[in-house]
Image (cartoon, rainbow, N blue to C red; front, top):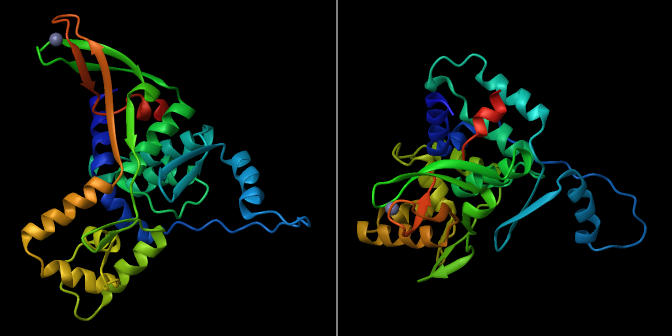
Length: 279
Ligand SMILES: [Zn+2]
């Protein structure tokens, strides 16, 4: 992987928030339901499952209430991906909205489903496994300072903790956002209000949408309530939110060939993603 590709991957990971903002100009279209002519009454699950599994053969649970059906990257994905990079001259030109659309949103059965940063990263790892391959190699460093080439796989190294929404702690319910459309609608509403403070970011609104404070359920009122909390209270709120949210770790345990200790090696990313799609 070249230095430029590594940089691009790092930016992809850090700028997921920008995606949500930019997606307003390119809203994901909800999949229109297909008309069925089944005469024998079936439960919706039985009716939908085989259809989904045919087009989207993989399913992953991202939370108590969140199941995602997805399909692997294809030659078409590669074409679309290469197209994004055709006229890139500097990192600022990279369209992350498009990258995430091509890599993740185009591969899931309902592209309007809201996905957090961690959920997108996890899905990218699974898509890489099912589309390119499971195995990868990275250079790990032991506490003793010795560097070692670690051969591992997505299956072995990716540790994912699914979100725990909905959960109520001290009268605050932490819940998931259902759709990208819902998020964008609230963001636009708040920012277009005459009394908009100009300080509340898309990220603040996104966070507020994850909360119900007792009787306060309206995002605008939640934002006001957060503004009036002490920083200590806000920190507790954020910590609780983080504890309940999805997490992803890339960890491989190997014996260090220099000091002989069992060592946990952490990869910063899963390599060969951009390479495979750009070659
Ligand atoms: Zn060592």
